[in-house]
Amino acid sequence: MSKHDTRDFVKMHGLGNDFVIFDGREDGFRPSPRQAARVADRHFGVGCDQVITLEPSSTADLFMRIQNPDGSESGACGNATRCVAALVLDETGGDQLVIETLAGLLACTRLPDGRVTVDMGVPRLDWTEIPLARAMDSGDIDLQLADKAGHQLVAPVGVNMGNPHAVFFVADAEAIDLPDIGPRVEHNPLFPERVNVSVASLMSRAKDHTRIRVRVWERGAGITLACGSASCAVIVAATRRGLADGRATIVMDGGELELQWREDDTHVLMTGPTALVFRGAFPLGDTL
Ligand SMILES: N[C@H](CCC[C@H](N)C(=O)O)C(=O)O
Image (cartoon, rainbow, N blue to C red):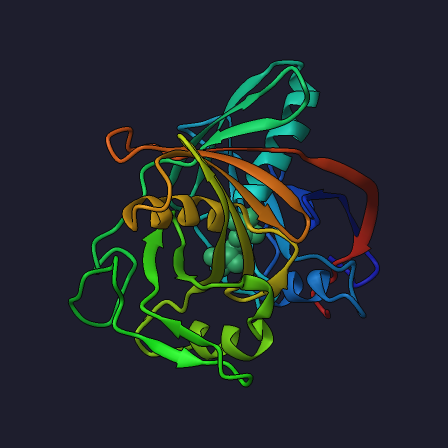
């Protein structure tokens, strides 16, 4: 491939969490970590929160590879899963499909209103599955810190949705200095695979439905307008802390996701919108 060879892509987003999507199902194309970083760069590339590549799968309709702007890979990306489902269902004309990721198979259903529901699978909750560096209750992680303004963040809940999450419940998520505490938690040695960091505050609670405000610092990406796997981690964390029981609306900077999880149900269901922004082509030569 010469440096002038270009590769077609589709730019999509889920609540402002945006993606450059390549299709490698025919030719096995897969960006190197360096190429993914360049594509994701908002000055020298296309710009996105994650680079997504569709690949063949022997167990599902397709495999979805997820690369962060720092070139690292993830086992889950809830918002991108909805976008890829919508993109491929537009091709097939169907309303259901299964997407394989590094963390497992995700069943996706397009609803009559155009939103997509993804069965994000069973949350992993043992300390070894988050993972944590030493044995402890993942529902009450032994970590506390303060942001520059002195706001205390104490005892996050750890949840793995195919990727690692730490959820701090705070009085007011808006007040937290996320650019300060995000990287400090992401790179804390307690998280051997790093971690996505959410700050969450309860907005309202009715019977069987809770509204929760959530802001996210994503592993390998920084602050994003929304994070689908984090929304799953938050309903699981809130349920474990007795703050939710079954259904929740997760209110993020980019909009709202509808979540369902009951401890006996095991699977987390996430529903939300998707948007196709534009199609383009990018020079991906090896020299990049
Ligand atoms: N930064 C995440 C991957 C993207 C997750 C997010 N965009 C989502 O919608 O779940 C990680 O390294 O685990």
